[in-house]
Image 1 (cartoon, rainbow over the protein chains, first blue to last red):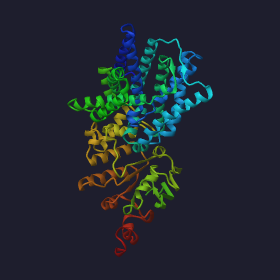
Image 2 (spheres, each protein chain N blue to C red):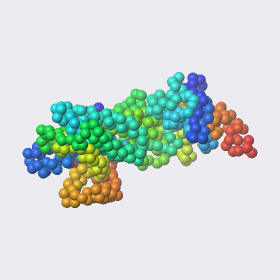
Image 3 (cartoon, chains in turn red, purple):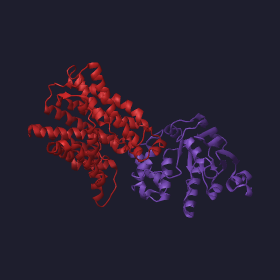
Length: 324
Length: 244
């Protein structure tokens, strides 16, 4: 891989500087803004991870919260037994195993069947966890009392996001990433080019799920109390899809452009109209689909003149320099 | 002619529900020859191509290339065993540019190329198929003939032993057709073995060493183009009883 070329070092260097600067945020703002920052970074990880798989393949997954919830539950169960880094490892393993099972059993499904399956999966996992809690542990809901501060959560999420962006950046220039783009363009052609499409799709699905699981695990201590309804709330999956679509799921930094405005919007909406949140979410969804089918990134590319195509990796590098 | 058998098909059978699309097909393809696969519309030619390339799974029968049984392997494995194809309805990767379309063929073959090596090889191949100037044009913006060239280029990038052309010359105007025929002949001279499904008689007569004619899923003739085209059974299949 072209790891030592300037077009690799420059965006990565700029990214590193920005992330280093962001790490000092806790010493600059009060806890309300820290809580907002945590929301933004956690949605940024989820939407970027979602786009890593769903952007190129165009498989709309509503299973985000399945992995997020598995991560959160792993912390609730193991948080007081193991040290936190070990808990994160366990959460990652659990997410990976579930993602492998789901991947191999569903990624042969296409289009709307996949969407429905992933949505159904959320309900299934929630019901199974509820059943287990009611019939085996005989206690619905768990407390998460860990010695982890809000700032710790922020730093962990920030580090996770940095790792995710770096992974996505490397992926964008790798054979695996290119294979995923070919599959998104035409799966039949991909097969006849010698690509094992099932393996590629499962690999990316698992990778994406791993980041979602870790986000759930890192976020868990923030709640102190979780039960299946909180941890596996399907609303989260929809929010992530909307954010990624608004930003533009086919560019590495596209989702971020949707995450920032929508997290702020949702913050205002939940504060001002707590009872109408679902309706407003639906309206936002429709507006985005009708007015911005290519997302913010698509809008930018449409009005940027003259239209000149460059390789997608160059594109990433460019947006990486200007918007990160 | 070299008589070594490259591809051997025997007892190939495929049914879609009650419809038997391919019925006990049997033929061999020799190293270095161009085999024409002919027959009226709906006679099962494209299904045979799909069965060879792994796009469809056969119900019965055997496909063997260079002594290796590839029956019902997944398409990517068949591609790795040296078979590349084009599609009846041209399939390029529309949002990717021409270089990337060729790289798709280079990056996942048995001896893959990636990075600068793939880029250079792709440009060289584009030059060979006459698309050097469009290297950075998205494939979806190309004209029909250029998309066909690009699709052929992607197939060639796989460095196949056997190339399957499914009506690759269809829909071309007379001068494009002459270019197309010249290009296929050049490939044959470079030693490539080709199976072509084709309706264009000029192309069949000037290119094919041998033809297999199908009707209603079964083979009805096998021989040189002149032999099969004058075969009463073939004439009947195309034109009906009164012309035979």
